[in-house]
Amino acid sequence: MSDLLHHSNTNTLRVRKATSIDIPFLAVTSYESSLPPLNHSPWDDILEETGTSGIKFLEALLTASASAWGNVEDFRILEENNKPVAAAAVYLPNQDDYRYLNLSRFADVSKLLRWSDETITKFRLNYEETFGKEPCNIVFKPQAPWIIETVAVIPEARGRGLGKVLLKALLEEGQKQGHSHAGIMIINGNELARRTYESLGFKLYISFGAEYFDNGFPGLTKFRLRLN
Image (cartoon, rainbow, N blue to C red; front, top):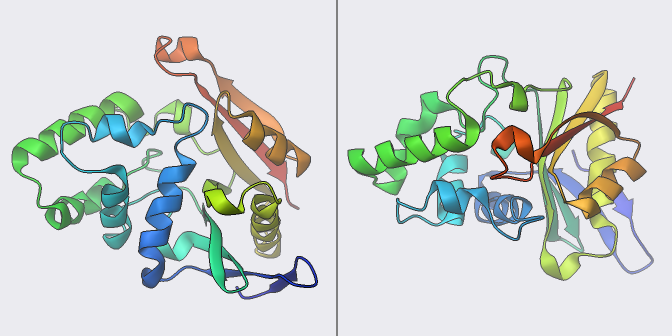
């Protein structure tokens, strides 16, 4: 994907597929996407007992192609004047395990991070506490055949509508591929993301409130948009 999008007379925007060279950037933007609205990433809690930072973990995850919510080849990067400023993953969801990790590849992740068996056990317990023990947890059940995740614009480029530019390109790509709907998700309280998605035509699909998580988490809301 290499369509050029002209933002102004001075800036040129281009959306392209990510490559392995982009992994450090993708790890940062993936981590950034997990912060709102709490200004705190769930990865920090999951990794608390491992001594591994969220960004380092996400780098290993992408290197090992162990994410079920978007690996390197699933990411699209928005460049402004040849500089990466935003990224998002778009993928066909796994029907066997709705959760974030592709556990069949997790041994490669732990090897890259040089985790001990004890560290792996601690991580798995924390991961299951966050994402559930059931592979097909209804909370994460895909609401569409074309799922968009981990949308983030780097801090210094925010407030100029660049996220919307990237999302429009992803929706156009899904439409060209013949997918019926696109889906996207927020943590409840992320009103900026909600307004952005609704302005593009996304409609509320299902919401899980804080009470569903024993009030230890704000909850999740999923949106869907008809493409064809």
